[in-house]
Image (cartoon, rainbow, N blue to C red; front, side, top):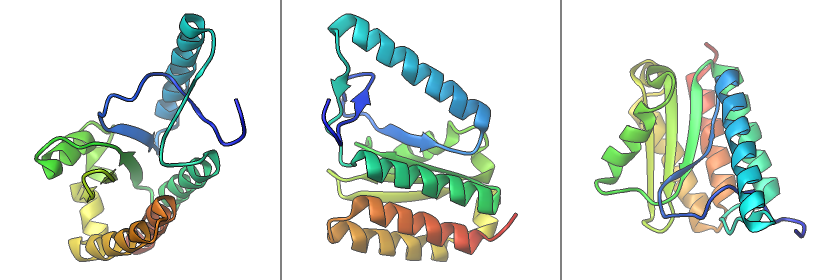
Length: 170
């Protein structure tokens, strides 16, 4: 494997896949254990790890992870980012993903589908009290501008920062 390549546990099927669902440390450990188990299974079946052909470099993924951790810690809310294909209707698909989180009421989901050119920000009821729709729309506009400039990771990171700043401390 060369620098900048990433491994993954399964072939991309076009379904939306999480970058990270942050907040709950137990869930993070469980996710890591599942990923390690899947990577071991892939290595046993193929003799080597598969290479991820995704939109982000390892460095960008690390920056995204740090942005999620920072937003979680600063606000007490749970921030999640999903990048991938969304089923139609797109808003409904993003809401379904948001509903699967451990605490959807206190969570914010940023769902991005680059191929469909769609961005959805879903806030649970508790999060919405701290991040009004108007502020979520401003963060979305900022992200879209960065996406148009060819910086999807930077756009997501900037948007997370804006959402966390607006939410303030818990």
